[in-house]
Image (cartoon, rainbow, N blue to C red):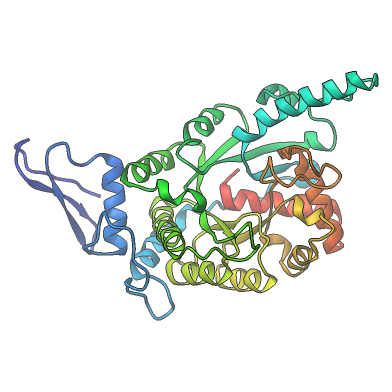
Length: 383
């Protein structure tokens, strides 16, 4: 890339981004373009010529014959060299990675749980059970087998309120980050948030963009929400984050709940097939899982403690049909702790029990699940 602008600081000129066969011209005025805005505008120009600065409108993007937006497909092709290839991990003594958790929520809740359990033990005059420490380093050091096989985790910042706290956690060894706007926080989206995401994507230990996606679940009816304006905003913010992930060359972390049809439509029409995707905490239909795995060769499904729940046979059906080399292990902690810890705070050490449940469902040795999923994590996130 080559950049140029008018020599006089007060002049109106341009920033020229040139490639061997094409060039893009961006308007320039003194102080107007930060690096993040430049990247953001470049993404908009690559995907929607002439519409930089606006959220995408459904149905207005030019789509190629195979259902992909041409600009995004071209960008993905240029980024293919960033795939995390190399030697597989050594499985002789393999551990595990929690590929999706919320440490900024887990650690405070562990502190509360620790106090509650200690108080209960004192009241019953029973010896207190070993309790997990609440500070990250002390907590990790206090893990006992099989939980102490934890090697690393990916902690998620999914709202503007959590970005800074999650970023501070990245100073710890073995803690990596992903940042995005959760669909239930779609109202937060604006240019400033977009710029901040662009800056975060450039940091060393940030391995993905997300979680982002669609959540149409209605807690009162257990069906879909009927607020069409809210659904439309979620779609727009999801599409924009897909574009940013492709431009940044980062894996996309997808959240989908009660939105199978819309999730499939947006991903199949917007995302280049070669882009790495982690559809996290997969609880949707086996049919959607099959379509996603068939369409996107670098897409993996993440399974949480729900795979151990008695009423989750449909999730176990999805695990059975999904190739092991397309599965990622995650907790989504502090939520959905696996059996036998239901009702407790889920944390990255619980991946050990999720892996055991997947091995039982698929009828394979636990070592095979751990080794294959560890390699899947390396390919997806480079960890």
